[in-house]
Image 1 (tube, rainbow, N blue to C red):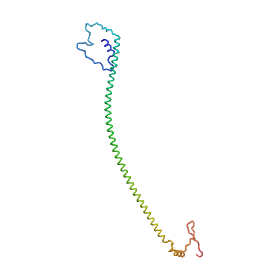
Image 2 (spheres, rainbow, N blue to C red):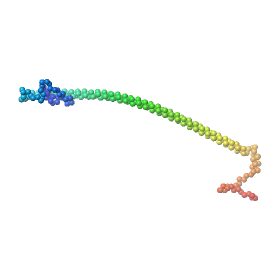
Image 3 (spheres, rainbow, N blue to C red):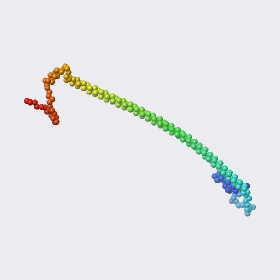
Image 4 (cartoon, rainbow, N blue to C red):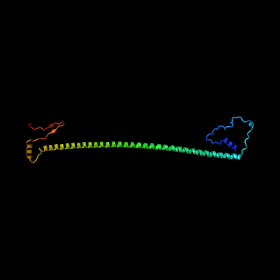
Length: 208
């Protein structure tokens, strides 16, 4: 039985991914491999006992299954530990990222409020300036219309005065006879012509 176990251990019973076997110091009173054999065992030939083939096959198969099972369990445990570490790290990172996002959101909201306040003040000032400009334009338009109205009134007054002066020379029923006698006393001749050079040509009367 021990021979089979020793043979299996020589065939690599230790899993390939496991740690190396510890080096144990020799027990007290036992020889190391470098010590010479005793006198009683000089010339002794070690003959290994016979090995049962069926039993060796069963033990080999069981050891193979054992190593496979242990390796699968080890990989499962390692993956679980790594997953827990990753989840813990990811949770910490996610929490930190959430805090940073919240702080950035607060800063952006504060900046947005300040910017809205600044733009509102600029808009109010612009509206006030536009209102002042409209009032000034309206005042200038009113003044212009007033000047135009005053100039129109003055023009009409001058026309009225001119018509009044001209009306003094109008022929009415009261001065009709006087105007006729005046026209007869001072006759006027319109029998004249104008040359191309602008000279007035009057007819020559006989005896003049």
